[in-house]
Image: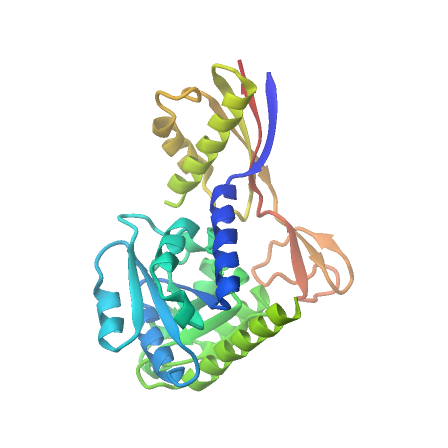
Length: 223
Length: 113
């Protein structure tokens, strides 16, 4: 006997993502899913972003790693509210993990939650977390071919951030080629060139985040 | 390796539907898989073989129907299968295209007995 099913395999995850979305909306919090390969500079960018937005918004970071709490310790030491998720081998964060982390954050005292996904350019793209924005970071030492090789993340991103611009003179990285491919895959994404160490480009990146917070709240107000 | 989580979700759906139908055993699972879904079918099969052990779905055949990627040009309306990495319209060359198929990932039906 044949039984018709027609159910999206990611339904269970998407339903929890929807719960996260509702919780975030209720608290008027902007959530940003930050994805990149390991070592692209996600945590350093989070530290810089926290500095940049210090007087503008109250932020927290959800740190996703396979193991350890090193990144959370770095952030907490710098005075940033942060919470660690260890996936114990899992290659991505899912909506349920983010839901537990959100339950443990002081949501009434926050404007923006950054979700630093597990370093991986493939799997995190498949799992909705209930975020408003997806951001992919690509660092210059990785080479300009990453959008060619891992198109999914670059296709779904709302912003593409090229990090470690200070290393361009020392590594083989062709910014024009990177931008051409990234823009070809995804015309609507904002493109930022930043350096988490020197602070280059962080102003524009921070302004984009604040702009999106404003837009999200204006839209919520119109409902 | 996100196929592990995907296989788990797939198996949950299959077992729930099988229980609802009141049947004892699942013999076939028909899955629709978009070419761009990022899911590797052999990997799902690998996880399924051990995750389904001692469940009514143990030994069921997994049948994957692959959906090719398809895009539509927002400028001229041409529908085509993008092969080029730059994803430009094959008719007018515009890069303003939307993906219309290729991201599918769902259980279409199951065979039970």
